[in-house]
Length: 330
Image (cartoon, rainbow, N blue to C red):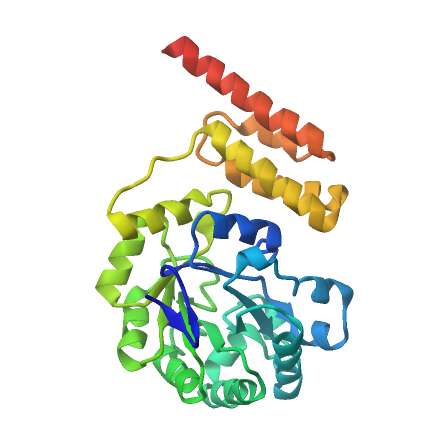
């Protein structure tokens, strides 16, 4: 059983904190599909301290999502600690996570995200100060290094442990790789061998079998699933089922996929209003359609739609055509 601080998870399957994706609408679906822990998208420490409306809204946690980890990022100790204190006192999150992996230039230019990977001493200092200031367990999400010449994954994870961090999640790519190439799980395995806090491995897990293989081969305490769950929360459910009973649950039908897509949209509409939610759902709908036959024309139409009802009409119209075609064939 994976335990982070005083929080015990039902299983070792964790939804990654993906920016622009992991809002309460998607996180709740992930939880309903069995994820042991869901992680919120990262929030700026300065955004929290300046009481930016968008930033504060991102701290909302539905009780049904728990246990949940809220992720913050920043480059300065004072503001990061102050933001962590705010999250500790004013949210019902279970865990505070510090982002040390975001590779995008606008984040690293502020000495935040993956920029920390170059300085184990800063990691220790920042994490220790945060741990001392809050009651909730503090974790870190990091990458293996900045580039191939600066892979300090073991040193950095040891710094997190020394500072009192409750767990570390390691993405097996460098900052320079962004999301390209392949994740280096051998380095994640080295991290696990050199710290005693829980290690959650992340990167290139696209099937339940891969999740089980990584847990067993590298000895990690949990697996973090990100892109493989986009439009496909069944990946989380099927992984949990496979780890628990060794059985691979069937893939969802096209209609089942669209039913969940619409549930996702309706929850997003409750959060953000129809206009914003429908625009955001265009990318999600494309992910839900992934792997189905001849989706080109419906994808094009989805990218133009502006209403919930029209999105529903397009998606279920596509499913009706697909089912009619399958009936003719059978």
